[in-house]
Length: 292
Image (cartoon, rainbow, N blue to C red; front, side):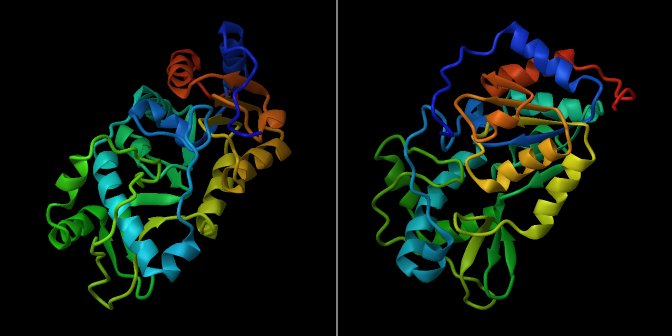
């Protein structure tokens, strides 16, 4: 099952060399998941050490003021933690590989924007990102920083009172584990009074078709696919691996724990993403003229 521990030994030198051989001389598209950001201090969803999570669904969010209050109270805390999170060495290695022409771009299931902060330029934010907030009624938008100012004005002392409770566990979507949210005041759209929602694809919500098309085009324009830090448990990411397999592209899959794409991988590495990406950066040739 995706996310369960991989009983195969950790990736060794032969596995790393096989990954280099599969990718060398090819333009590489990259698909990343929450496991890519664990070395930045953000937890993943389904890795072997991940705690069980029950993220809010889209239907819950739009149908209940209580659910929205609960969500925004938790997100208010989680955003401050995520906003302070820094890219790790894997993010920087991937950005440098793009600058040298080896990597064509990144499809990420993450909403943390760490790829962009590390310098990656061609990024498809498949599930959106946490820095934009949108009104579901009129389409009004603002930055998450602007909304944070409003939430602090509506809820003075909330952050300080919660932090006094001790460590707060933050999820990859900027949610936190927090039970007591009664009394938190939610900000409505200043233009029409509608529901404000972060520009993130919730569970039960469809990925916008334009983003899916952009991801397929990235795969089709590449000569190989590197998948890093995802169990591929949901179709939003798995579809790109299946598409690459149909195109006959080499697929290198790097993850701690089993994935739904293991049977499609040309090379499968049971490893963390940061050491593998920094190794690939050193080893992959810069010349790509020999791409098949």
